[in-house]
Image 1 (cartoon, rainbow over the protein chains, first blue to last red):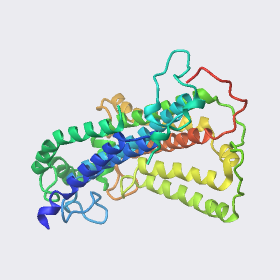
Image 2: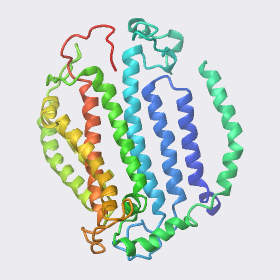
Image 3: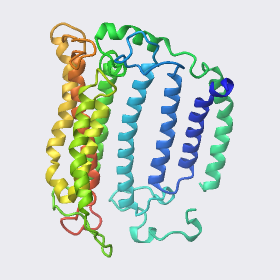
Image 4: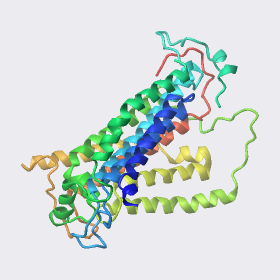
Length: 139
Length: 258
């Protein structure tokens, strides 16, 4: 048991990061992509909390337990709190950019996004790009 | 680049990075055996030195308060960016009616939903306030409580509908909350300097350990964070919700903004 539990949380973090990256690389939809970024970010939560954990410790709050009781690392918990706030605002900002990209390009598929040109007209008109490619129907 | 090539590239990069990652994981201390010295010292010293029970709040608002100031302004910048991108195109007008998709039936809101929201809304707000106020004593703080308070406002939308939500939530107030909270936090850093102390030095009386009013300056900073997070997240909900508003006039093609 000890051999497995000594590295399992780190392996979970690496796995979460890996599947998040896989999702980002193969994404066909910006909203799906933002969700995958969230999965990547949850890997950092697991990693930080895993690094700060110690068996037999209490949460770093000395209300019910007197100060001096062994507690887990409070720095990591503060970092996770920061991480969550950053993640939430970043998700919001990316979703706004998704809305704008959809309004400009008429599609949520990153592959169909064309460079913007001066004058505000995107490369293709919104009507035609909403038609899906038959060969590229998402699984 | 075709999806297959991308996955192949990702797999290649993963293979290259895998030995390094395995090496790092093997080099980490075994899970659960020990914690970093810094955290252990904070646990040992801070309850005595700052009279607070919650170490996470002590780190966020006192020991590493400067980092939280940066985080606060990052929050402000991200929300400002959201507002500029969405509102810049839409304008500030209000119609009070949500967009209707032609052909989709409008199902009237059931009375059970309204009742549940009216009961749960004030309770959520109360719980948010409780979490905010007990930052230095029990698990909680401005960030967590602020998000709970902001999500309580969403129950207004769920229970009263779009018009009721627009009536209750005023964008100017949210701006004031958000900016005022960040300003309050920055002032908490600057005002101690007027007395000759260092930036963000805890000059207020520290209070009693395990009391609601413990931690001195931390309580004010916590309040600033709670205001900014409540205002900021409600502003986010508002801006996204406004995307469903019925447009004032038919959109002209090729408009130039945002």
